[in-house]
Image 1 (cartoon, rainbow, N blue to C red):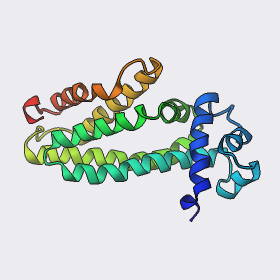
Image 2 (image 1 turned 135 degrees about the horizontal axis):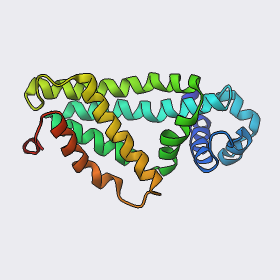
Image 3 (image 1 turned 180 degrees about the vertical axis):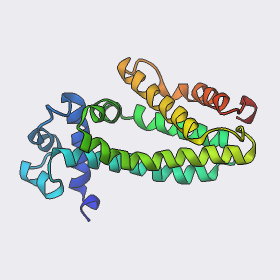
Length: 198
């Protein structure tokens, strides 16, 4: 399978850097090839076009993150712990790779509708992960029984997402990971939980 080949990952990693530096529309395939240390034609052995590269890098990075988080969250006992784990790991993943953060938070948002639709397929799995945390909180009594799962999901995802975007727009001047506990406390309060469960 192509995704298991070293050059596939090499090209995706190069694409993240080139898109972050130049913006998606100015990131020519030739620049990505040069950064990856491969011939232009090699790119097309793995990807149909630049759009395919952008979608693939999001699927790979976010897809792997979701799979890892499913395992980590399952190991936590309380919904409060699960939520903190999700926030900390999300912030950690993107703060450790500002280029990836720029691509996911800024460049993907400016892409065309077709790209956004394909990306939304991956995001659905992230939102399902958030739903499992909300349901766990409702079942354990940590969250109010009448919490609207859809609204709580938007609150949680929207807050995490906006925190990363704000961090990028502020040129990563502060430690994003250190914000995790404050964000978790705010979200717990919004879902009817409390700091006692942390």
